[in-house]
Image (tube, rainbow, N blue to C red):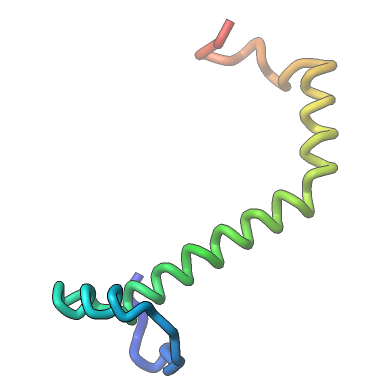
Length: 81
């Protein structure tokens, strides 16, 4: 996802000398790579938080399905039996 310049803000990051030198040598855009890595880390953290917040409900739903079967299972086209 490409963002407009107005959506960006300068910040400082610390990289190892070797990684920065290699990235520059290869012509890599360190800012874009850093932004993508942070976006992925945020996505994973939000996903983990959602799973933790909903763990009880997910467990209850799984137990219900285990006890009563999946809703509309008789209409499933692909069965794993």
